[in-house]
Image 1 (cartoon, rainbow, N blue to C red):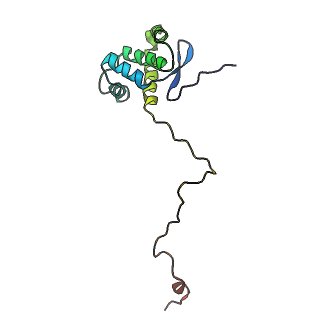
Image 2: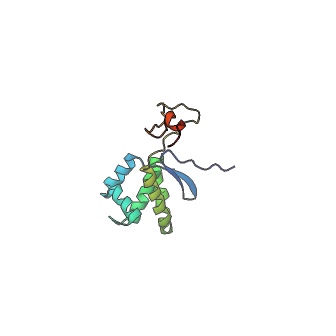
Image 3: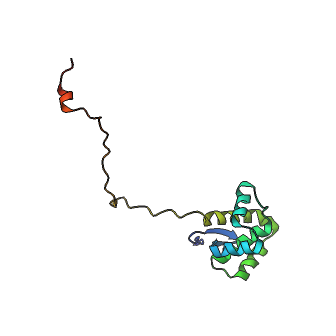
Length: 144
């Protein structure tokens, strides 16, 4: 029976180095990336999604993926070793993983759904529009 890794809340699971691994970008990892490269995460996001801003380099992509591993609990050295062991042919899949990491980090969580039988906190009123119902005297009086 194979058990797949579960994504952490606000993170993803991706195959790296032949294994399914959880990845998560938290504020700390985003700030580390920005300090290391002198580039804002939103500039990277703009380049990856709409092609404007700074050019995303392979080192940016690889560092984002390594920081995603660190954010999910892996030690820095182990994350660096996994990412650096991947050949250049993996740069395109790594770019998609990095983009997914950024997008999920900035996607708000869906609010919890109410149960079907739960009562609403506000009582609802029927909508009433003046002048739409005929008066009884008008409805029963004959037309001239």
